[in-house]
Length: 127
Image 1 (spheres, rainbow, N blue to C red):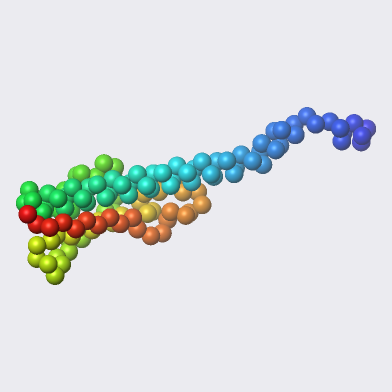
Image 2 (image 1 turned 90 degrees about the vertical axis):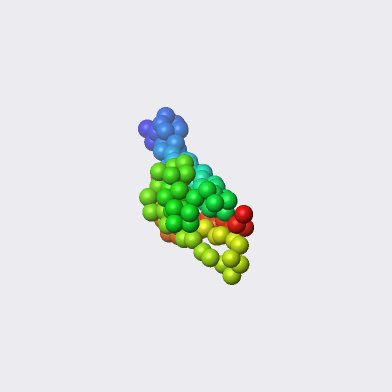
């Protein structure tokens, strides 16, 4: 009876799949999270760059930069912080926006994207 039990391979694939499935799910979720973070970083950079351009050509005022970045951001994210900086050169404008990585997280199973900031900055000459 013991020999028959040891030769019986029914259900082995299901058990092996049960061992591998959590790893596959974690890798897929972290891949999605990484891609989403890159997308949000690009959207933030695009919003900062276009707002800096609008300020540099005089379309909007520096005081409206925060609201403009929020409206141009293609994704709905809370906690966006905008900082406008005047440099030593009075002919340039610098705008920096950042968002906590925790606010960008969608499926962060391992907690890798919970600390830190996504930051984008742009500097342009005033025209």
